[in-house]
Amino acid sequence: MTANVQKPREFTGRHMLVIILAFFGVVIAVNLTMATLASTSWTGLVVENTYVASQQFNKKAEEGRAQAALGWTGKLTIAWGEVRYGLADVAGKPVPLHGVKVLFRHPAYEKEDKSVTLAPASGQEFAAQHMPKDGVWIVEVDA
Image (cartoon, rainbow, N blue to C red; front, top):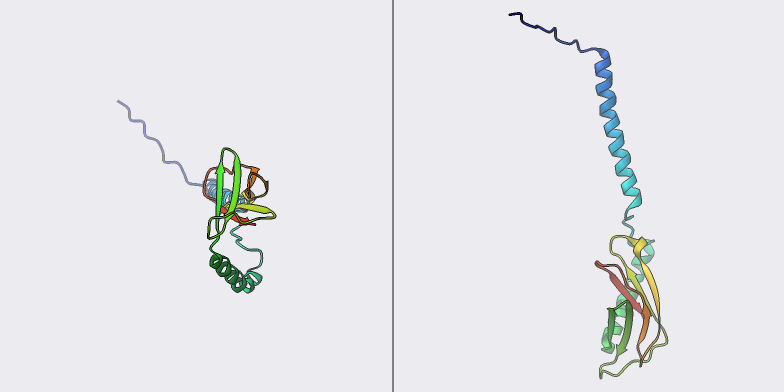
């Protein structure tokens, strides 16, 4: 019986070059992928100018307290492809409105934000055809 003895392969500079190129190729590919995903996703920007937003905070907080003191309650309904809004006072009587604008803001992706202007509907309610995508939304009503 004859034994087939193979000579060990020699590790050359060419092998080292291939290993280094493969390593850096993977690192560069991963970096490009992560940079592309980061630039096409949520910017993380909550407000355009934080300095201006901080100056307006007290004014907005005061407006919120004044609005809460009125005791008015708003009713927003989203069903069957329709957005409907009505506002009632403390006694439950409808508050006359001149116009209603509803802003649907996605908490993590501002490109999905949508502003809808509601038109007068039955009684003192306003309505428009709009159905937001499934998920969590921040809804701001300006009446």
